[in-house]
Length: 394
Ligand code: PMP
Ligand code: GLN
Image 1: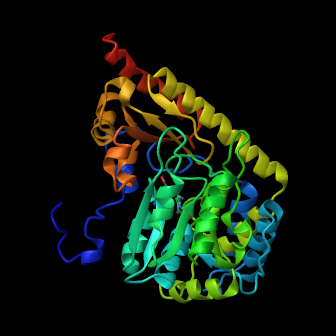
Image 2: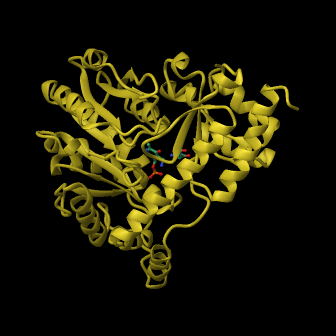
Image 3: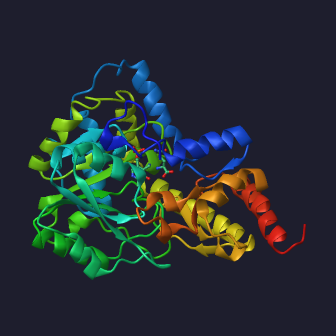
C-alpha cells in the first residue's frame, strides 16, 4: 500500500474504515446496505423525547468530565440489574463518547511503547488503531471454525512478559460469537497468572439469542479488580449516532482512563446523557422485546442467505451474520463484496479486513440484520439472483 502523505507512521495502513467505505458504496450504487451496523428505525420514543426535553430544559453546556451523575447512577443500576456487577457511580463509572472513545482512552492510558495487547481476530477495526495510537503492539489469536473457537495453547503463548492488556469483545463483532463461561475461565486464568488488565467491549450485551448467555469477564473470580467493562447506548437503544458510552471498573483504572479521555473529547452529548439514563431504566419488557425482535430479524436474514446458497454460520449474538461464500463458487470476500452492488444491489462487509491473517477470513462475509423486515426480504430476494446465476438459471 502506498504511504499516505503526512500521516504519522503508526497510522500508515489504516486507510478509511470499511464501514465508511461500504456505506459510501451503498449510497453510490443505491444498494440495500447490510454493511455498516446501524438500525434503520429509531429506538424508544421515551428516550428520544427525553433528549428533546433536555435540550428544551437547557442541558446544553459542558456536562461534568465523568458524565452527569444521574447517568452514572443509571449505568451502575443497569450493570447491577442485568449483570450483577456493583460499581460506585462516584468513581467507578465514566461516561464516554461512545464505546469507541472508551476503548481508545483505555489503550492510550493503560498501554504504551513496549507493551503488548492480546486480542482475538477477527477484531473490531478500532482495536488495531487504538493499540497503534498508544504505541503498543497487538498479539492476535485467531478464532477458527464454525464455532470461532480459540486454541487455549495459542492464547497462552500470546501472553508474554510484555503483555499489559487483554482486549475482549463478547458478544463478538463481526462473528456473532458469545464467549462461553469455559472460554472466559481460560482467559481469566491467563490474565490473573500474567497480571494483565482486561478491557471488555460489551456493546452488544443485549443482543444475545437462543440459550446463549452474556457473561461479563469481570464477573469471574478475581477479575473485577483488573477489568474495565465497556458498553454503549448506541446498540442498546438503536441510537448509534448519539455516541454515549461508558467504562466501568475499579476507581484506579477508571481514573487512568479518564486522564486520557479528558484530552480526547473532554465531554460530549449533554442533552443525550439524561435521555440515556431514562433508557437504562426502561422496564424488562423493553429489553426483552428488543432482543426477541432482533432474534427474529436474525432468523429472517439467516433464512434468506441460506436460500441464496451461502453457507451460513448462525450467530449467537450481535447485529451480524457471517456467511461463507464458498458454495457460490466464490473465493475472495473482498472481490465478492466489491462486485455485489453491481451484481445484485446489496452491500456487505468482507470479514477478511478484520484479520491480520487475511487467509483465515478470506471466504467470510458479514451481513447486518438490524434492518426493517421489508429491507431484509428485499436483500434476500436480490441475493437469490446469485444462486440462480451460479446454477446457470439466468
Ligand atoms: N465495539 C464494537 C464491537 C462495535 O461493533 C462498535 C460499533 N457499535 C463499537 C465498539 C463502537 O461503539 P460506539 O458507537 O458506541 O462508539
Ligand atoms: N460498529 C459498526 C459495525 O461494526 C460500525 C461503526 C462504525 O462505522 N465505526 O458495523
